[in-house]
Amino acid sequence: MNKSYEVEYCNLELRFDRRQIQNLIRDLIQEGYSLYWSETEGQFLVSIRTGRKLVKLQFQRMKNRYKIVGDYIIKDEKLSELIEKLINDTRGHAVVKRIKDRQIVIESIMFGEIIRLVEVSGMEHRIIYQKKPFVTIEEMIKAFQSKRAEERAVVLRYELDYELSMLFDAIQDNDEEAVNASKEKLTALRSEMLQLEL
Image (cartoon, rainbow, N blue to C red; front, side, top):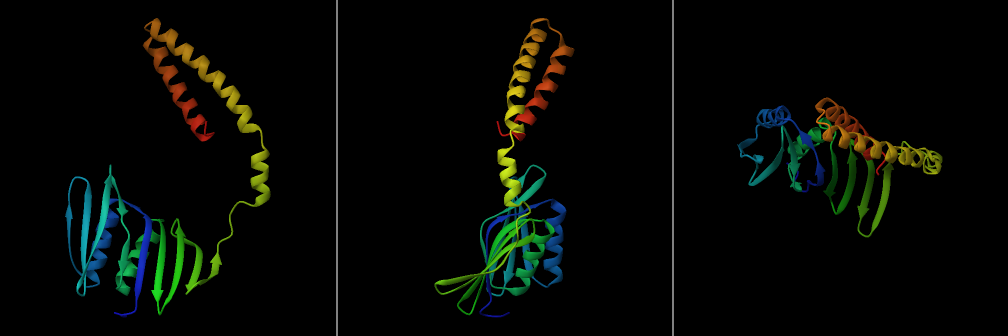
């Protein structure tokens, strides 16, 4: 292990299924790490011994999936590689700070891909790499000038009012079939409103 090696993982946004956590545990065991894990109703905890240090990875349960929580400082190169493999495999988001010889390299990762790389040395910082955006400025201007969303929003509100009155009539008439049809239509309208951010 390189004594000057240190990596800090911040703002981790990784989501897993149980199989991916089991694969991580398998990889750690194959690499020779001493570890144990425990599970409660709300979280899955993996404790990894690296020399004299104990690194505890916390996975918060979210229905059938898990999300990693917390910031981690890793001083073990192999463990760092496994965490980065996890970020890549889950197409996660993270800010990774590599500290080496009084110099820091900061990687901003989105969807498992480096989008920005900055080198910090003392008070100076230098952008080594920055991924170009998929959307051009011209496309953004065109989207902002477009009136389609505003025009659709006006019609959508009329459709919503009409469907609510239809639902009210169906409830008054005890017409269960019409009530269900109206509810389905309202769900579709609500989804469209959310897409238009109304």
